Image 1 (tube, helix red, strand yellow):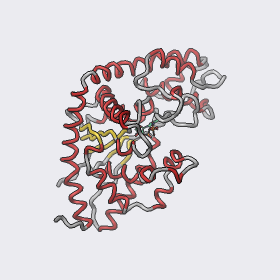
Image 2 (cartoon, rainbow, N blue to C red):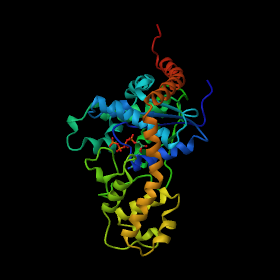
Image 3 (cartoon, rainbow, N blue to C red):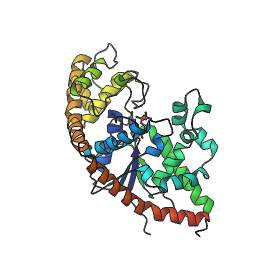
Image 4 (cartoon, rainbow, N blue to C red):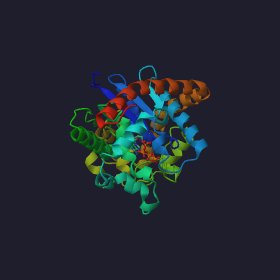
Length: 336
Ligand code: AQP
């Protein structure tokens, strides 16, 4: 088998509405990268159940997530779009990687610490080994590049450690060391109510995030209520240091308008937040509105979305199955 040199894998959890953080940090880049790479994009439902999910809501969110990707411009003719659990190779390789990764490596993962909170002993084992499954998601395609938000940087480093450790334990040069692609001006979008927390689907308050399905009125209301400070906007990014909430809004503005924060601040030097927020709401609606409309149109025909996912899973299985077969051979499993 010739190994791919420009292959992408990335995933998103179908755990609720996708938000502006998912879009600017990762999904928008998925669309752009299709021109240059062979892409595999999945709805990671195996990851979703590391915390409790309502089965009907999970199924619905998975289809919604797929529709959102298509609405944004992921092209199912170019890229494989599929549901993770429909490709058993992910879980198979995930188990093998559980036997490569060390407890000490997983103990260092900050996402587990944040998600488990104070009650680590009540967390599922799945949440703890989330990063080994993520390594399998990537390496089961021998993916070379992984577009993600900044919060996933550590998991990507662990993926490289697992790949390297597997190669050295078995004396092979089988797995590539995949590179994270952390791109754009908003690689870590923060909560609208607290500039120290990342925008997240699972935050209890809906006012912390902008969902891709929010109406223009709701977007305007959330941005108006977004936390800021009493100072006017500065003329350059240096003036945003120690102003986490202001920095976040300027970053979002820059990313949505495909400019740098410095360029945005040149236009708003000395402006009050009321004016800036009004313009940001308009810009956000202009960028997200068409995605929402297209998503609704696609969801009116769930049969089409499901057929895309079926085809995507078939292509993903065709790529992943021979790789898992190779790995089993390397590990020494008897194929009876
Ligand atoms: N706030 C963010 N800023 C930039 N990128 C982000 N991503 C997530 N939040 C931000 C990126 O979106 C991709 C998909 O993320 P995910 O759904 O797989 O998981 P997550 O990182 O755990 O996202 P959430 O919203 O916080 O989900 P919940 O609340 O369900 O855990 C990833 O590339 C991620 O980096």
